[in-house]
Length: 240
Image (cartoon, rainbow, N blue to C red; front, side, top):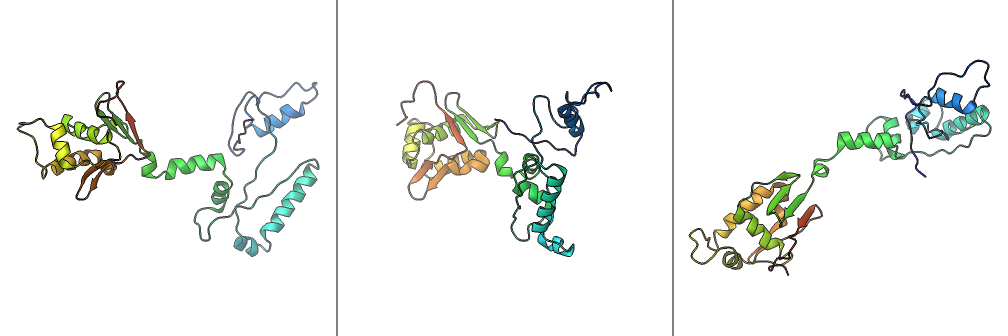
């Protein structure tokens, strides 16, 4: 069963908000209720309502009452208006000194869908907006937060070599012998391999720590939860 809520304070025009029946027809209580609410989408029915009351004990005391008394009086009023109604009250708790409007705190504490959606839109942390890293070995492409990173061929080869040996520390000598052929004019030495790694990390940006330095030993690829790897259709001979 799918449950949903509607905001009764906002106008909402649906198929249920139809013109009144002719005067000679007997009134339909269900249709009349739907027209009064003006917030019941077609195919659903109202089964009750939630009234959020924002007030803390200090404000209630200033008014000469307390939360428990307010709850009891509202329940009694509901019983007077509709004896067949069922009531349930829940008190929203928040950390002492929490800011914001009382009613907003109550709505969030009681998991109101509209309040939660608004909170996600206005207060979503920057880290939560990151789409992560895609290391596409089949197409030799690095994607950061849905943007293709401008890495060089050799930088991607360096990253790929570490990825295919995930969890193993690779020393500088192995990187040079595996990624540069003998006699290459641009082949680095063990001291300058750090420069190549530094350039790769700078292009990884916020995700630079997936290439981790193991002091005195070399480098290692560390996979994070926000990293996905797309392997080539044919397994690489380097994969083990």
